[in-house]
Image: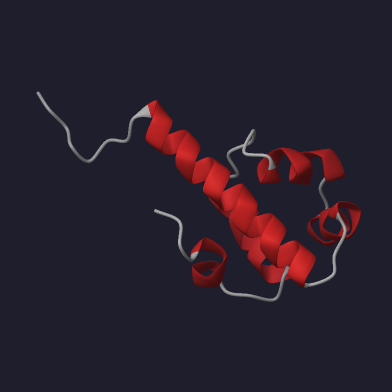
Length: 82
């Protein structure tokens, strides 16, 4: 049975990488260091680094925390990612 709505591993990795690039772009635009953002969301800076590098797939609560810390809505954080 073909399930076209499921993503391949390659598609998933593309989205994770795109999210990381978007997060880094917004963090840097806001003048925050990795440690600065990590402190705002109560995470280790290495976790933020792994997310930005596309090596960590953040969960929904992490995405919400990041958006709040960056003072943006989730839609802006996810803009252009598909």
